[in-house]
Amino acid sequence: MADDVSTFTGTPPLFTDAPDSVSFKKLRKRLVRGALQAIDAYGMVDRRAVESGEIPRPKWLVCLSGGKDSYGLLAVLMDLQYQGALPVDLIACNLDQGQPGFPKHILPDWLEKIGAPYRIVTEDTYSIVTEKVPEGRTFCSMCSRLRRGILYRIAREEGCDAIVLGHHRDDALETFMMNLIHGGRLAAMPPKLLNDEGDVMVLRPLITAAEDDLEKFSNAMNFPIIPCNLCGSQDGLQRVAMKQMLTEWERKKPGVRQVMAHALATVRPSHLHDPNIFDFLGLGPRRRRRRRPERPVLKSPDEAEIRSAFQTRREVIR
Image (cartoon, rainbow, N blue to C red):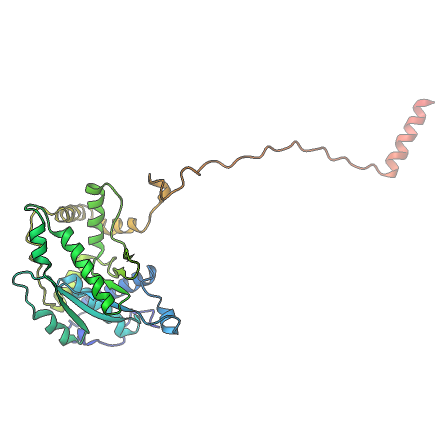
């Protein structure tokens, strides 16, 4: 098994036209290594069990929207697969949601070029969302629910164990801040999640990757980006405000995003206030057992002491 991807053993077709610079190679290694560490840390696949034949080879549905993050996700997973570090079958899936002006040819052409198995699904969720969501409200929540339900169905049809999403570290932090400020709860994006039906996993291998790295990677790889005109055209999104706030914090204190991401993986339930995750009721000092006073140790007199005592007694009597 290829546990170490610090030295690449070859070049997948996807990277044929990639830059040959040292900086790009370091960037590629950082993304690939981070994804592999997340896959192992969160048990996304038991690589040793698959390779030993203990469990069947899994199949993942890699969701491809046409944005930089999903392109980067597929590229990193294909890279790991090519290096022999990811014993998983991959199938890319794009959901054409019927948005006006969506370029239908871009993704199929690109996927054919790199030799990736894929499936394009057409579902007009655009009309549903624009009809059901009141004016002035954002589309994100309903769009996400509709899209996720369709992807679960496609995963079952394709025999996939999991759907794989391109959410990264900054997405998780923005979600955490939204839940904290607007939702009144501590929650981010789980790296690994089981759906309500209990038959499909949701995986996020890029959960520790920085958005800046994915943007640099996308630009260097010259991915054919397709902008999202559905939610990207709306103003006043809470997520946009959270992103701006985190960007300002990063400007004032460089590295704060990474520190916050570390906090998401370093939780002390006893220092929070939720009795459902820590047993405060059962917390208390241990009962101290009352110590009994020590008994004096009686020394057994020897024969000489006994004779001396009797001798002393005779002398007193006389």
